[in-house]
Image (cartoon, rainbow, N blue to C red; front, side, top):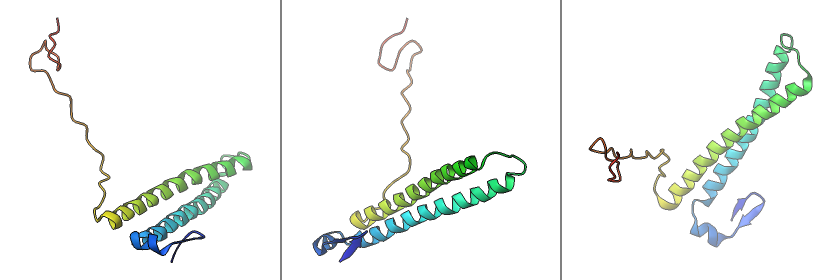
Length: 125
């Protein structure tokens, strides 16, 4: 039996998807890394702003607001990146192929051969 959060997954489903337990563990680690990034980021930014408070005085609520917003953005980025790695792991375990995440290049439009002709064959006046 595999546990996903507080739910137990049926053995038949686990047998059908042998990588489910690895994927669930990976997602759990991804969420914990995101939570850790939030806590450490908020604490670090708050301490940094507290040290800069002598040179640039502003109210405490702005110090907290900036710390929470910036660490939320950082936490989202960490969780998203780690979850993408877990998705790649899931695809690898299910299909046996590594997914291609490289950006696809768009082909350049064709250049016309004669100066007055468009790529559609029309002649420009």
